[in-house]
Image (cartoon, rainbow, N blue to C red):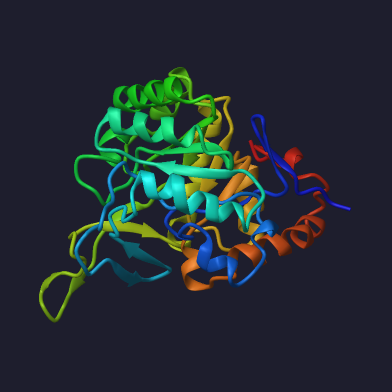
Length: 303
């Protein structure tokens, strides 16, 4: 009998499978398809203080082995998420939730953290300093170690819940930013967010996305994500949630061998709404096939 249980510091998950923020909404639609309690956790849609409509269309573009998105953090705003969406999710999922928060100033991150701190089913704050699809926030804080550290310290001071910083791959040295977040008190790290990319419409001879640039996700980014998780695992001692192109149970094992303690499934949910459920149910088979009895034992095992 294999054990899929993993730990993120003091938070225990029945398995490492977490649908990624932005690819699972607030869980409501997926709860109509299957029992969400087959998952380890759920990273809910990125939340900002004020409601956001997001970027103008076109917001989605296909590409080989992946997709581009430029949604732009569309969400109903902090009050609606805290009073409506998260209590509704608690009716369908009894595990700890990752609340993904973002801001356009340090103060906005703090306001989100203070509010999420009071929500019973939020187990971890996932702090997005890495979204490439908004201007003046997100990635603007995550590409500089000092800025990332400043956000980390501020959020840590505003909550007693574990704080995981979501890192951008759009940097030259992700390990230095990871260390800065760890030194500033981060309880863990999430990586990677999407890679900055674009497409051009040959009919109009213009950028296809309304935002010009978007974030590349899907299987195409998996080797990049794996490399960055490897590098960050070598650089820090805090837990890592790995993500980026994971689409099978074997990908999960590979990511954990690189150093991830848990994983998030992103674009795969948009291609197949049952993807996270199927990967979670297939994980014991993949473990047995590769002689793995306990998932915790393989974290960073390839180093």
